[in-house]
Length: 208
Image 1 (cartoon, one colour):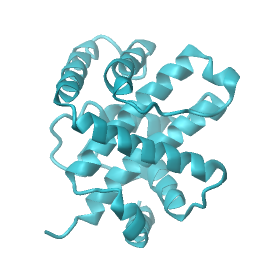
Image 2 (image 1 turned 90 degrees about the vertical axis):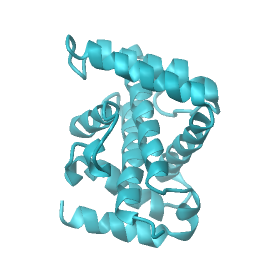
Image 3 (image 1 turned 180 degrees about the vertical axis):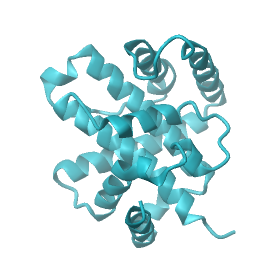
Image 4 (image 1 turned 180 degrees about the horizontal axis):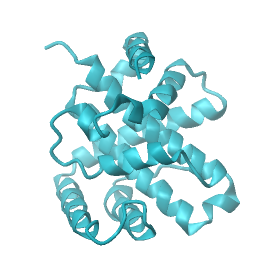
């Protein structure tokens, strides 16, 4: 069956968007708010009608991720680009560990469902919800290993609010990696289909 590179590219952009947000948070203590909202909301899409629906149904919601993905596909292994590549690959590796652990997958689904009830009382970007998402990452995903080493400003990374946002964003990256596998993504494409993925991302950005 032919691969749907549109869906694969959207899901990869979701992973890359999380990687870029983590990088921004770790170095600057803040990140692109619209992209952050898109990533958080993706965690609540349990039964989406399409790949794009996971990210709010608008391609422009993934602009940060698409631009980051193009950078990753073109990157040499130095500097900020290497950091983004490392985060992206690490999220893909962790997703495979999660996929192989049915108990962890079930727990993740249950914890995210419980979170939906909390959203009746708290805003998605509230400290309460972001802390809850961070807790899910620490309890369910982190133990699967290997841990993702986040690099940035030590002073910023010691801030508990930044730590929680980083973990919530990594959880969103795992969600995008699960989606990426579901639509036919594989790490081999990063080696053998880079040009195709780059052109697809370029085409999406062109009509955003």
